Amino acid sequence: MNRNEITGNTGVLGLIGNPVRHTLSPLIHNTLSEELGLDLLYLPFSVEQDPIAAVRGAFALGIRGLNVTVPHKMAVMEALSDIDEMARIIGAVNTLVRTENGFKGFNTDMPGLGRALAVRGISLKGQQVIVLGAGGASRAVCTLALSEGAEQVWLLNRTIEKAETLAADLNRHFDGEKLIPLAATDWNRVPEKPSVFLQCTSLGLHEGEGLLIDDPAFYKRATYGYDLIYNPAVTPFLSRLMEMDIPCDNGLSMLLYQGIIAYELWTGKRVSNELADRVMTRLKRRLYGENLVLVGYMGSGKSTVGQVMAERSGRAFLDTDAAIEEAEGSIREIFEERGEEAFRSMETGLLRRLADSAVNTVIATGGGIVLRKENRELLKKIGRVIWLKATPEETMSRVKNDTGRPLLDSASEQELYDKICRMLREREPAYEAAANEVLLTDGRTVGEIVHEIIDPFI
Ligand code: ATR
Image 1 (spheres, rainbow, N blue to C red):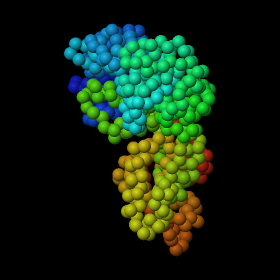
Image 2: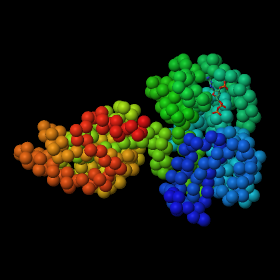
Image 3: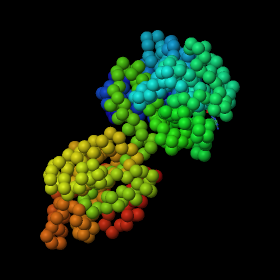
Image 4: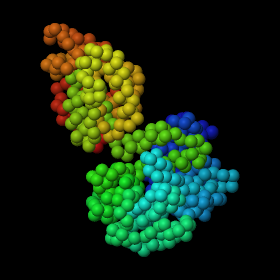
């Protein structure tokens, strides 16, 4: 929402915590409001001293709903008019929903993980579940496993006493002694049965940290693994599972769904899986990197520059022409057998997919991709669009020996030159409209161009 779109009717949602500087919640909630067309604005509030006063003040100010994060998830509970049963068991709230008499507290972390797993097709019902870590996050995760009917939950921790206390406490709320505490060093007492692993320690948050349990034999039990950490994207735990070809995910989907469930509680709306996917893409781009899109005429250096740029900035590289050739056969044949329009439609289809899912990628595009208005809009949705511009002379010198370009088939050098001049003139307005920025490449080395483009990003 643009600041000048805020009116007296705009509802306010927010987050209280400390620190809140790096929060991704505004991105989640403001995207949801934008996409659902709701007149709501979500703001972070850094609350250092008195979370109870903050909650009471928020109620007095008419704030519609709040998220609560570290370190106030327990402290705010005494300022609430009511607390949801599951949040009471977990002993912490992260979502406050406005009622007539005050805020009611919920915990959406736990159902957030439940929904993230369900969307992935993972069920804990009747399963052997292995939880690593016995801190605050683990408490919500064990509660989820027990409430979903796991057959047995092994709770492994470096400090056995903490696992014992947590297990004793949670077992009281559920039938039977399904939660079994174990020192991490005793991992081989866990039965060798297919198991879902849920990683809740802080290991992996910082560089150089290893695994709670290093022995690969332990992980042979895993049918699936989830790490609550999402930054970095790949922790040592996830990297171990990936090496063993075991499906796994990081904690970003839990962050997403705890936010979505909170939003549903506040607004009464149901967020579709498609909308959730779109929010996920935005989260990934914010966290793991924007895409950079290169447009320009043939021979402007998109592929060469793009590949070097990808390598230097730690991004993946994708060339739309190469991707289409891989899926559909050579471009020359597509042009000859199915026509230019068919090729342009393939480009549009590919751009749509990239707009939905590409992250941290440098994308070099075909020279004519900008001709369709829809494509120009999609390109900007994908990321930052840079037009690599070159004069006809420079273009001529780069493409004259290349026979893979059907649009440039010519009888003589003069004819080729005239063709390039004409096409550049025709296409320049389209490049201009598609791009966020322009870079003249004449007389510059690939290194110089790459430096100029990615310097501001790294
Ligand atoms: P959270 O609220 O995110 O769960 P926490 O309550 O501080 O965070 O819990 C951190 C978890 O990571 C604990 O299980 C902790 O193990 P201990 O209970 O033994 O402290 C685990 N953890 C953190 N650093 C660890 C390390 N270097 N080795 C093993 N476990 C570690």
